[in-house]
Image 1 (cartoon, rainbow over the protein chains, first blue to last red):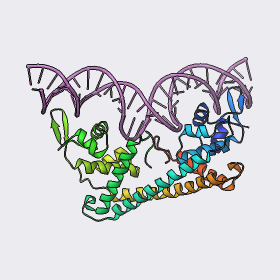
Image 2 (cartoon, chains in turn yellow, red, purple, brown):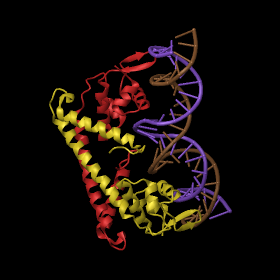
Image 3 (cartoon, each protein chain N blue to C red):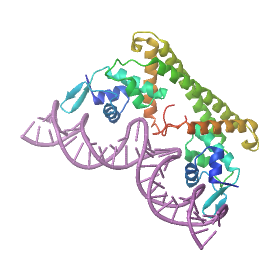
Image 4 (spheres, rainbow over the protein chains, first blue to last red):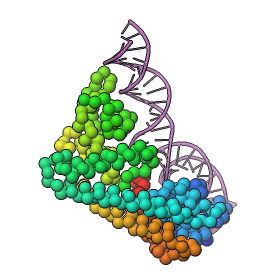
Length: 144
Length: 144
DNA sequence: GCTTGACCTCAAGTTGACTTGAACTGGCAT
DNA sequence: ATGCCAGTTCAAGTCAACTTGAGGTCAAGC
């Protein structure tokens, strides 16, 4: 059994965030000692899952749904596959972008605007961005 | 010469955003006809550059600095290289993550928590996340 | 028994990138 | 000359994921 400070220390997640996660239903304290929350050790596994979900690009509420306490905390395979596919697309985009940036960084053309490969990159960028916008881009979730 | 609606249509960027960009110093109208802004055609190139910068993960103020109207609108090569390196790292992370997700999606172990490769992925995730947090994670910029 | 200080609650603030709404203007077609 | 309506301004709202601050509680050490 751990108090919030110990969980914070072991997980690297601030106590304020842990309280926030509890409020959002992402985690639960095993109980209270007076006012103070006490946590079981397996909270750390759950926090790992949450971090993993975040890195994978799920929102906290998606994660909360996946990790509901009521049902089995089983993760839906279809959703994971879907997210893997999205990641794959994103990786391809980022790879193209990285190559483009490197090219521009080393390109000695008088102006990038005249460099054909830069122009191509730019066109792609704009197209992608416009599309993303049309498909209702989630605010607060940036490109990188 | 185009009015704001035409720029919006051609660029895919809403008029409200264009006004916002102007307020932030990212773009300038060539002039006004009455109250109405009029834009030169090369605004579209500039908007492409802005979109490109956003996709690369620069903030609007970083982009504004890179595209200042006063100096030559030349982009600093060092910054681009830096960003390309960051992208490279990010790509490697996402690739690992994608593979992990795919594995879990297809893994038939009774619980992912017992799957060694999943546990390894989780450990990595938590470590990365904790580190990101320590190095003062920028709010509003998510992982994906 | 009293202080200390880690924990608590709840409301409000932060960040970046926009969007929305109300109230206003003015060029162009009738 | 008049009225439409796309354009304007400016303040305020939105979103996600937290953080911060003020004021309160209580277990443990002296």
